[in-house]
Length: 67
Image 1 (cartoon, rainbow, N blue to C red):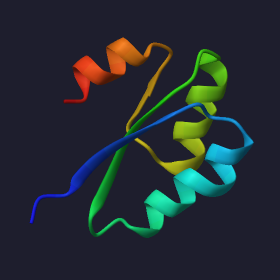
Image 2: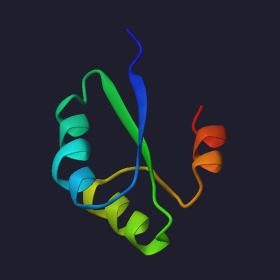
Image 3: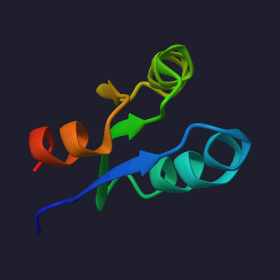
């Protein structure tokens, strides 16, 4: 079975405390590929902390590049 590709929009407290760790726990079925936040430094910090491939500041760019 092919893994579900996922991205998280917003890199604030809830994403870091709940959403991203939940996706990481489901690594057998979910490939967390990217995060997106208007705050570029926060997005980059998040990908570094959670070992995620890509950071974006535009949802349009994330959707077009990660499909």
